[in-house]
Image 1 (cartoon, one colour):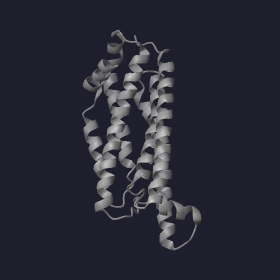
Image 2: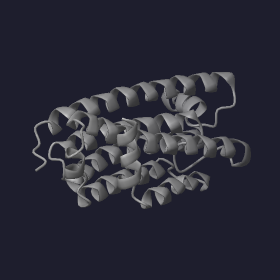
Image 3: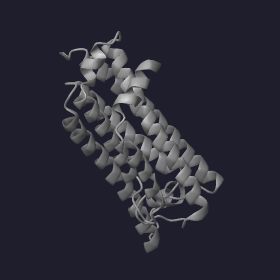
Length: 231
């Protein structure tokens, strides 16, 4: 597995990945839907798959003394590592923003564990749709990305739209229990013990969803790729 991962990073990592990871700096833009930065990381992963396809990676890997299942697992780990790096960078940006930026983001989710939880679910959706779709043929990277992008953007719009709505309701002075709970516990920079607890639970749930969906995506991808003729 270590050798296959080494191959992935040396032969399949698209240079644009570093640019898209750097877009985590978008989290320092005031009043912005920060989950958009995660979509760019999904775009980077698509470019990596596309580059691997154009460079004949599937045929090259088929000539190595490894099974299709091992090849898929290595690629899934490759994807997970890129997403983990982005989440770590996001955590750093959130920590910086909590002490240096305005406490409210009118454009979407505030900096905090909630944002990381939503990002985890976004990546889970991408993995669950993109990976099995790609490995159904082993070469239709664009079609797989289009399908996953639809799922990702539905989640992104729902999350950021709900947070924007909670801000609007709070500013209007209306007292709606559902939106009050979101505004005071989820769509906010965590500073009280109660808020930290709620967001920690949300983050834990997001992490579980990510792990389960990614494992399922890997299993489906292996099952589908076993039926693909690489030659």
